[in-house]
Image 1 (cartoon, rainbow, N blue to C red):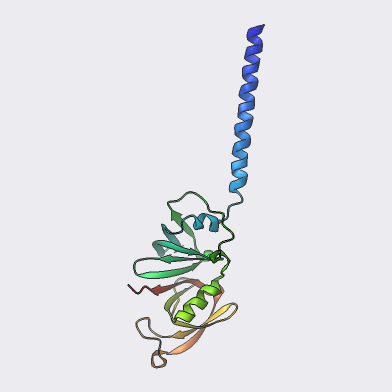
Image 2 (image 1 turned 90 degrees about the vertical axis):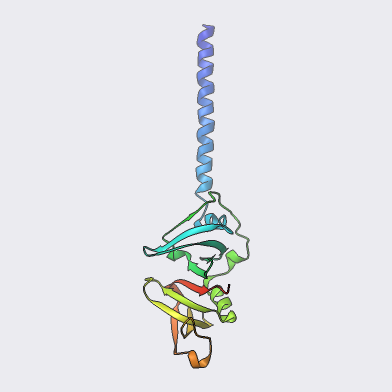
Length: 183
C-alpha cells in the first residue's frame, strides 16, 4: 500500500511540475506577444543588419537609429532612411528585444528625419514606394505629410544653377532615402 501512495505522490509531483512549466511557457509567450517589431529592431542598434525592401533591394549596414516608424542605416558608402512600412523582412544577430519606449529618437517621426536632412542640405536619392521610380535632389521644405525636393543630380552641388525643378513627394510614397556618406 505504501508503494501505491509513493507512486501516487510521484505522479502528483510530476503533474505539478508539468503545470509549472506549462504556466511559465505561457507567460513567456504572453510577454513576447507584447513586443513590437521596433522593439526587436532597437536591440540591433549599433549592429549590422540586412534589410530587404523590394525583391531587388537589399541593404546590409549598421542600424544607427530607430525612430517612430522609421530606421536609419549606415553603410560604408551611404546613409539610408527607411520607413518601417517599406521593410519586407530584416535579419539581425541579436535575438533579444529592447522595450525602451522612452527613448527620444523613438518619438521622432519620419518627417522629423527629413527636416534634419533639409537643414543639413543633404543630397538624396529618394526611392518611391515602387522602388523603381527615384527622385534625386535636396529636400527644401518639409510639410506635415510631404516634402519639397529641389531636383539636381547627386553629383551636383545644391546651387540654383544646378536645380532643374521642384518636386513634391508625399511621405507615404517614400520607400527609402539614401544620401552619400562623406568619407
